[in-house]
Structure formats: C-alpha cells, structure tokens
Amino acid sequence: MNPCRKAEKEDLDDILRGESLLFSDPWSRKALEECLDSPVFESFVCTDGKSILGYLITSTAAGEAEILRIASFPEHRRKGVAASLLRFFLQRAPKNQTEAVFLEVRESNLAARNLYEKIGFRPSGLRCGYYSKPREDAVLYQLLIKKEDPKI
Image (cartoon, rainbow, N blue to C red; front, side):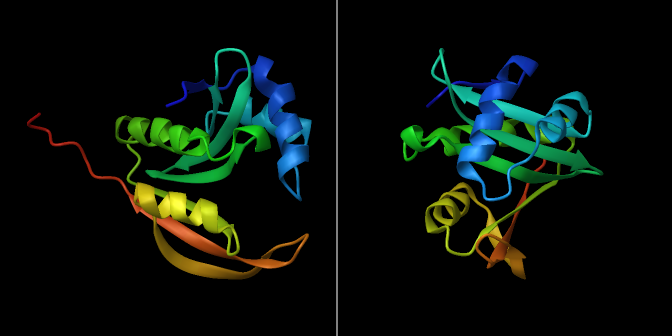
C-alpha cells in the first residue's frame, strides 16, 4: 500500500502534469488551485516519499461526495495507487458525514471499472455521449457508506 495524504499547494505542478498527460480534457491551473482552496473540494495524493504517484479530487455536499478526478501516472499503474487513494478517501467518509459516493468512468475503461466494483461501487446508470475526445458513454457508479455503529 502506498502512503496517501491531503494535497498541498506544492503538489500543484505534479497534479497539473498529470492532467495534461492523463486526461483528454485537462483542468487548468486555476481550476486546480480553486480545488485546493475551497472547502467543498478535497484533493489527495499518493506518494512514494519522493514523488507523487497519483491523485484524487472530490467534491462533497449534503452527505454526498463525487469523485471528480482519480489518476495514476503511467509508470505507476497497476501498482495499487488508485486503490490506495480510494481507500484513503473512503476511510474518511463516515467521519465527514458522507453517506454516498458517486463517480463516472468511460465505458471502455475496464481496468478502472473492475477496481471500482472490487472496492464496492455498483453501476447506477449511463450518460450517453458524456465524454469527448473521443466521444464515449460514461458509466455511473455509486457506493453507499455504512454508518458506524454508535455502540462501538
């Protein structure tokens, strides 16, 4: 398992590099700065102690969280980075009053879909033509968070 932590402003250049490298519609520096500064968004990174291996960006409101970005740098794929980020975020969810987590993923991204389902996410819908570059449907996923037993 790789160590994860909240993202800091010093991580911005690496996250920005990930955006341009990994996404067909990369977020701008300004958008990423706003995520780091806003109480509505949470950003996390996974590191090896020296370098950022991947990152996760979420938004949370009214007991629901949405995973907006999750990325592993190509040289670190299939090494548990995305799983570490998801687990780190989900361990925090009950303490943050989060009852459900949502995300969408390209229909063709079978590796990501398998990971989400292994962690407990369930398909909940389809957004036709949601992605561009190339145009593709998005599969919607949902994970309900079990409330902690107050007796424990």
